[in-house]
Length: 374
Image (cartoon, rainbow, N blue to C red; front, top):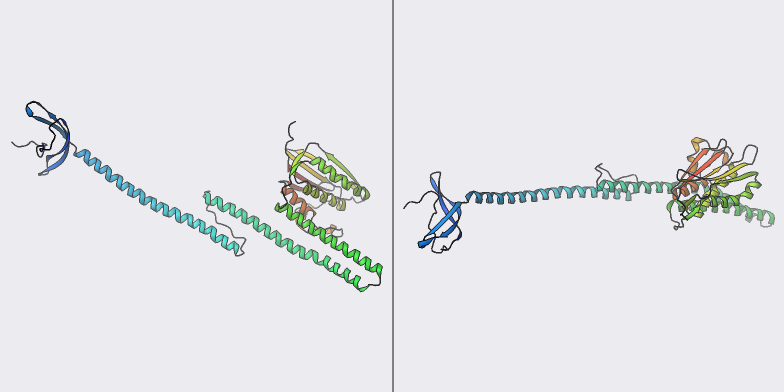
């Protein structure tokens, strides 16, 4: 008997189970002038009198869809792998290129080109942040090196004359061994020259100590009015001797965290300057040491009634060994205000020179810390 379209291509073999159950088989389906074999899935039912009923359906579409999904997944995986490899290669090369730029910049800096900097792309990514930090570090190194060269040049220039004078005094002492008075005077003058040079070196060391933070952390909570009063008390006899009236204006409870030694040294330098250059035309004058608080900042001021400093020169006087023309006849080394600025920066503070109308007002501001609650 002929088979109808879609009927099984063969009857179940002897190995086919006779009991009811599911099974897979092939069916012949006519198409394009020939029969095609399609997979089918069905269920076998056992019926009375030894007959079996097979009910199934063509699953070629499902099989084709499954094969298509498998193919798509395989190609998608291969494409993702290829894109990953390409992307990884591009990113790796980009990262290596950025790292190589850092290496080349480091090599040029090591070779002596301190002005070279790591290029930035403006992408605000981690490499740009690293470049910004490295450039900031190089800026600081360049500033320190420039300051070191400047200090070396200034020391060589400013100490040449005192050393020559010291040598001349010692030669005079050798040339007049019989004249005890002249020999003693020459030795005394040589000692004074040596003391001035030692003071210069000590000031330079104090500035370097304050700028570099090499001094051990001796920060403590300080009552600024108490510190100012102690330093002003030490200078009061000298001020009276020179005809100055020293006055302390303080607000109690202005507390900062800092190094007592460095802050006292900075205030002492300001009082030294006020005593040297703060005299009025008639001689003497008034020196005011004021402690206050403004907008959460601790303020320390030293005011005098002298000629002051012209506004155009107020920034220059903070440089090392800078002395204005009117002060060249007075003893000094031009390092006092340099130390004051270094100490202020060490304590996250600022120093400002202003007109006291008449006279000079030096204003230091520091972060204030609240007093502990009782």
